[in-house]
Image 1 (cartoon, one colour):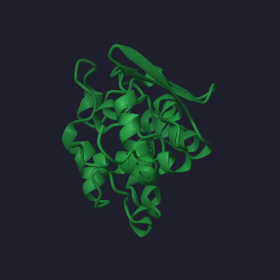
Image 2 (cartoon, rainbow, N blue to C red; image 1 turned 30 degrees about the vertical axis):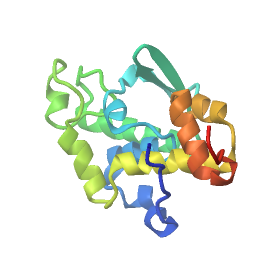
Image 3 (spheres, one colour; image 1 turned 135 degrees about the horizontal axis):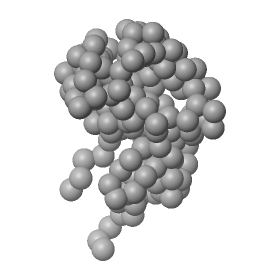
Length: 177
């Protein structure tokens, strides 16, 4: 039997983005806390995936793509990170949205390391996977529609149903099948 996700207490979530250290960390946290992206897919985002003028972000998932429509907070944080990225590494040819001092130096290098991503969340005391689950669960509590979750977060039907069942246990079938 699959374990159902449980919510993170509100007091642990309050001010999470504000507590993140710097423009990159704030945007990384927002992508996971607001849009429910995974840590790995957040790290793999390309600079060209972000379209500030249109207010959207393309998330490349094999074999499909998922479009995230930026809310005001994420749009503002994206703009701040792009400004900081240009200020620090304006000449970098690294195509990834998130780069570090090391990865900005060479276009053949990958995006930020797992360790850089982990440090962002260690400082906040919450693992990114738990934050992502909480965001999806919160959305599921406001809707009983798995299709809505699939559209907003780009998750599978099975995963969406798991979240709907966790958010609305009263709607779960009981008894023998």
